[in-house]
Image 1 (cartoon, rainbow, N blue to C red):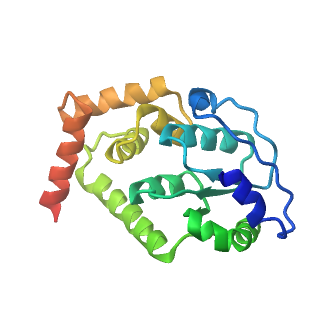
Image 2: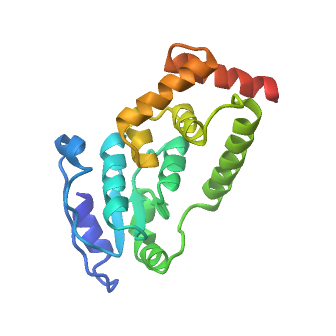
Length: 204
């Protein structure tokens, strides 16, 4: 349904459209799917989060520097932060897409952003607070990669999602997670996240 609407939204925009519908059952293989070359990609985030992450990782790997736009309803703020970290330059819901997609595409194609001001502002605050938290609460011997993995765990990302974000293997992520457990003195991911939340509360 979104593909048909997408064609209508852009019928007079001057963009050449190449639409491809991907079945959710293909989610594990989206990281290896051959995607058409384009200067700007619009991704419908209706699919499960892991599928969207795998597809974004695929596009980044084979088409670095392209414009990436995500359209979807009911995106949580944490999901939007993850998308921005992955290089997304536009986030619209379906209603906004009907009205703004052509103009947003032109902005992103020229290297700009099309993200709600309030969301971008809170995202910057989130990045700064995360950086301060890492410097204040992480064990001194934590490596840079372990700090990056820890950020992913605090965002409740799966190992595969952390691997896609950092462009490393899932096996390497598991290795770093194991090291984090040992350094923080916990046995489970939930305990690590709980410990981080308690430290956050104590630092306020």
